[in-house]
Image (cartoon, rainbow, N blue to C red; front, side, top):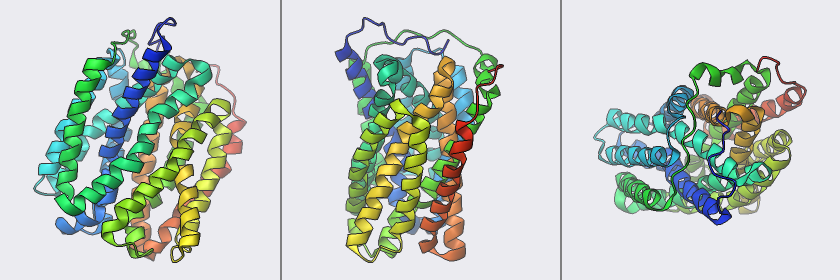
Length: 397
């Protein structure tokens, strides 16, 4: 079974903490690879003679690839030893980032985005499961949050520093840096992370039984809605800062770094809330997310108003990553890797839909509309939570 322990109960706590820390660093590299392009959209679009909304569809391509490939690839690879699998995934990310850096046109760049998108959901599903089991059930949420701290670190350092670097070495240089970092981390993991017991092979049909549970389907749909709200606005945050808030292009990276810094509090709060009641936490943080996104645009002309709105947006945004992951994994404790990957696929479906929705809103109503459109989706997601809370497990699940 997929919940079979990945570490012996007698394994030293210090060793477990080191392994979780290495997974968090890997998460930093992987999330930076996925989302770096958000901060590079304005420059990339100018360099390749594209509109920002057209370049934003590279985010959609990545997200939809994750959505479609995740469950099948995770099921096929779930029996492999985790350390070797994680190292292989980092090597894939190193090669794809190098290809992106050398891409002569949008089509090669799209290929460079497609390749790592195949591996990302495999990492997230299995890394979340491994962290939860290394920490034990009472601290599973906090352990997953530590891995997801890589997201906060990417928002705080990876994406903003990549954006700042792009102003001096170009957007291609940012991708070259990620390629080198991915390769170095693969070597670190190979040298320092202990091998983990190989899980038993479980057939796709048996793993897919969790989809018979209406609660699982409802929780997956909720993650789609939450991430649609998040990325309808976040995909275009750099452009909002430039064109609406009047931030000079050379300073956008620093603003994105501040956005990520506020998210550190969200990661901590999300980990605590996920261990208590992840569904209630989803409701609370989704409402906060919607308020922050809707307030950012009308308050953009005043620092006193814009900064609190961005802080609320960032805290909720970052908290929802571990909260949603733990929420879905707890619905199917007998198949946590598959459940985690299904949530990652759902999240990336939302990311792709959100990027498209935001692009359509910009085309129809202008850039200033994205916060309101995203906030409306967040409200709809929040309204669905009470109905999901009333669902009961399926006997056949």
